Amino acid sequence: MADRTLAEWEKEWEVIPGGFRADRSHLRKDVGLYCAVQNRRIVFIGRATEWKNGGLAKRIADFSRQSGSARDHHGGERIHDNLDGLELRVLITGAGKEAAEIAKLLCPPMIALHRPAWNVRRRRSGKLKLVASGSPAVAAPTAARAKAA
Image 1 (tube, rainbow, N blue to C red):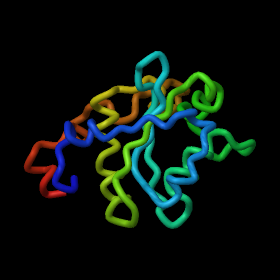
Image 2 (tube, rainbow, N blue to C red):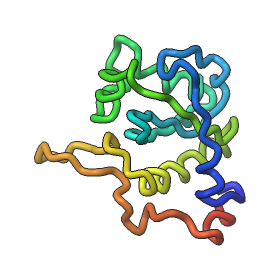
Image 3 (cartoon, helix red, strand yellow):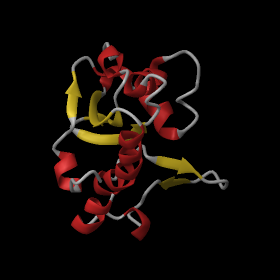
């Protein structure tokens, strides 16, 4: 993943003062990952890959909008319901298509690493299942795989 290991990317998380309600205009052209932190635990990890359409700023703003665009999944509902009690962190992979691809590759291993409680999806049965539960397809990349990406 852009010549970095998962451990190296892990060190790149930045806290956004003011959380999900803060001004994020400086993130309009950036793409990458974002996470919600509650009581010092990462509870959700998501990605913003629309570099031509507002980047991280737009994706994060979706959670506080009146429309339900970001709340059609369990994590989005939880973030919206807890906006004022969450810390927001971002991990910027860059700007443009290549940075968006890196974010797409980086998200599953980060979820597998942190196992955030809100990264679940509803099954047809109504039960919840952890997304990216650490299966081989989302295992943390080895140094060789990271270099190849």
